[in-house]
Structures are given as structure tokens and as C-alpha cells.
Length: 482
Image (cartoon, rainbow, N blue to C red; front, side, top):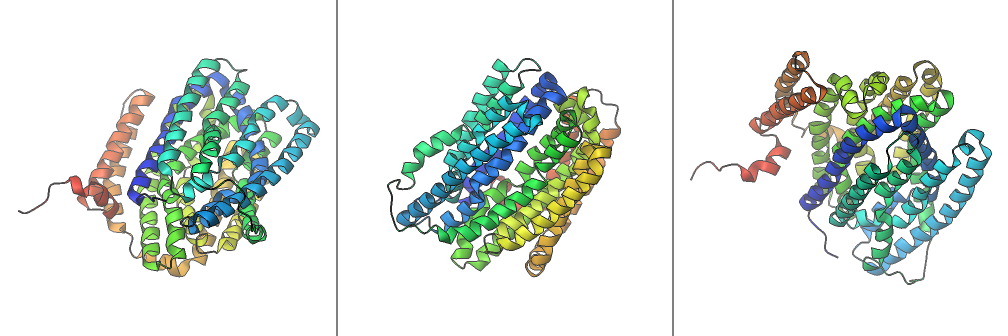
């Protein structure tokens, strides 16, 4: 099977990431103003509850499947056997998840009142299972993934502007969200026969998957505690109005996280492959490049969002969401933390077979998040939930850093700190200058600040010959000498 270069994979994943940024920038301002904090909070609550049952149905396969399939991608028979084993296990867990889901929705009064919304959101469970996105990632089919994602995002955009016009259209918005996020799963399933054999290959060995799958499943459970439990606890301890405010902050963070972790998504199957082939030098080179990429993007993004938190909320959500500003400022640093822990955990510990250490770090983070949520949400609402998430991400990264202290010490020595600092310092002065300027209009303030800040930052990186930037644009620059 043809394997594309990392550069092509990154370009395609960058387009996918860019669409993940562009489409929310188009849809979220509209939806926020139409549905308001309560309407968006309803949908977010439904999505968060369903995510728990999706998690059970998937059983850790989204991450484990990438690793195990990447290792056997050159052997079609073994790849087919592996995919069939994982799908059979997924389908069995999906049935159990749906049974538990329907019982929960019908028995919990606060859920039963909005059961139609939850049933619509629950379509995501079966679409996640049949989508086998983990196989497409393992085989580095990023061109296909990108094209299908863009197609369904456009479809969802059209449907949203067609059917969402008033505050009680939140159920329609929930369905459109499922279509936009998971509609491509149907085509993934149909196309599956091109990648693997669907006829039974025999000699199945389900037992070999159980231990690593449950380790990844436990990681997912712990991670979900401080990603989706925040929303559930806010809804139960405060109201869906607070969920809407928190969702506004999380939506902004999520947009940036998808950009910062975009390279890591591409590198994971290749890193797993290099480690399996004992190509340690190439393995370390990719990890170092991932660290540099995250620092390069995450630090300026965090600072920009924190300085212009109010303007960002006004542009994306409107004045009814101004109470979300503290939550935005508190949760923004998690963009950097998630980017870094994505490297230490998913790109280093997991491919090297040390997922149990990732699980341990995530459990510590989940415990911290749960305790802080219990104490802070009743008093501070969305801002309290944001602080719990921030502390959880700090704990996860610090613990993983401790486990990798020998390797990280070597990698840090290769990071271009001088280029980063010398490029960022003047850009920060420009950003503060725009913030203090009398420029009127939220859009224009953000636009001028963005162009000035990231423009100066980019020029500084080129001037200081930062390695990643030069590897991208170097061939377009005029050569010196004859």
C-alpha cells in the first residue's frame, strides 16, 4: 500500500485543521446568537452525556487501533485480521453501550425531560464505531480523511443556515452537529473493502487486544473526566446556562488545540512505525520536531487569546456570553499544556508501549479536576470548571515529563529557544500596542492585532532562521551566491 510523505500528510491534515478552525468561526457566532447560552448549553450537555457511552462502545480503539494497525500495515492478511477483531469487539460493546444509554436516559428525570435531544445525539455512537477512523489514520489516508471531512462540514453548514433560525431549534442543531462530525463514517465503512478483506480470515486472537485496549480505555475514561465531566457537573450543580458559557470558552480553546496538535496527528502512525522498526534516530528526530512545532504555535496563540479574550467572546458569541470571559482567560493556557502532553503521552509513551504510564498521569489529572470542580463550580461556575481543567492538564503534563525526564532532557537541548524568544518579544510589544490603541470595532481590533502580532512574529522567525519555518519556506527564498 502506498504511504505518502509526512509533508503531504501534514498539508492535508493542516487543511483539515484549518477547516476545523474556519467552520466554527462561521457557525458558532450564528448559533450562539440564535440559541443563546441555554440552547447551546442543552446541545453541549447532550453531546457530553453521549460521549460517555461512545467511550464505552469504542473501548480505547481510537488510539490503540492506530498503533496496532500501523505496525502490520504492510501485511494485508494480518491487517484484515486485526481490523476484524477490533470491529467485532467494538460492535459488541456498542450494543451494551446503547442498552445502558437508554436505561440511563429513561431513568434519570433531568435527562428524560430532554430525551429526544439525547436520542438524536446518540447517533454518534454507532457512527463512531462503523467509521473506523483509526484505520484510515494508521494507513495515513489523510487525503481521503480531509476531503470527506470538508464535504460534510459544508453539508452541515448549509443545513444549519437552512434549519436553525430560532431558540427552540436546538434539536435540529444537535442532529446537524452529528452529521457534520460523523456523517463521513458511512462512506468510511463502505470504502473499507478497498483497504482490508471483509471476508472472515480466521485464526482470530481477541485475547491479545484485551489488556492494551483496556489500558487505552482507562486512559479515555480518565481523560473524559476532566473534558466532559466539567460540562455534566456544571449542568447538574448549576444550570445549562452555565454550560453554555463554559462551552463558549471551550469552543475557542478547542479551535486552537486542533491547530497545535495537527502535526502530532500526522506523526503518530509514523512514530509507531519507526519505533517498531527500531529506527531510534528517526524516532527522536520526529519527537523533537513535534515539540518545536507546539511551542512555535501554542505560545503566541495563548497570549493573543488571553489579551483579547473580551473581543473574541464578543465576536464569536455576542454580548450574552460576556460572563464567559474569565473562563476563557483561565482555560487558554491549556492549549500549550495539551499540545505538550500530546507529545509526551500519545507520541512518545504510547508508541513505545508505556501507555500504562499515560493512564497513571491522566488518572492523577482526573482526580485533581474532580476535586476542584466539586469545590469551585458551586461558587465560580464556568470559571471554576475552567480552573479545574487547567490544573488537571498541568498535572498530566508534569507527571509525563517526569516519566520521560531522560529523553526530554536530550530533546530540549535541540529546541531553538533563542529564535522563539527573539521573535516573540517584539511581537508581544506590538500586540500590547494594538490592545492599548483606540481602534474601534471588535472585528477590526482582532484583525489588526492578529495581522500585526503574527506578522511580526513570523518575520522574526524567518529573520532568526527558525528550523521548522525555514524548512517550509526556505526553498521559496532566493539563493545566495552564484
